[in-house]
Image (cartoon, rainbow, N blue to C red; front, top):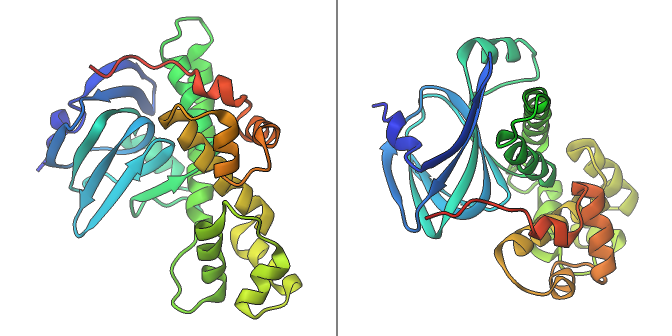
Length: 274
């Protein structure tokens, strides 16, 4: 079954097509339900605002603001948007472009993936801005941002944690996800895993291509971005709730990861959902 017209049945906001891909945005009504369908093309979605539940086979994903989803051509899924509706940026890739991309041994689109990446969200916001721009350089910018986004998605996909039973490194990431708001010392984390801190640091970097501290900062900044876009709570309160020492600490870190201050990030303008 192919119900492509239903798949993107939200109100389309801007569309730009290029030789190998198309980029467009869709707005979805509060509580909108989209029945089971499939897509002709592989595509990437970035949730710019709102949230929804996506069911595919026996799995159900809660897709929230700031998350990135890689969908594979032909997969069947259904979507149920929550009461705030949704604003989703989509990049649809045409077969010839995808075939050239997959000539690289490290690139594979053999399964759908849900990612949380602050950098991917930043790229999505920049694409959102460029799609509505009419200046002579917007097309060049969109193509460049799309390549950056693809690199980020495949890089994160290759390094995201995978369940490994009693694997102690997998348990390390579980602890970080559970306690990222708290002050976590490397020695304490290593102690809870019964390994030496130096061994933990080396093994963690080898698998996840970043330090424990970097991983922890990414978790905190992802949580802060979600709060900034989905609540009216004071920035100082969000900073403390997400594990930062104070508002200044959050400002410095967010600027480093996204190039924007919390106030600028929160002021990103979107069209109305209704």
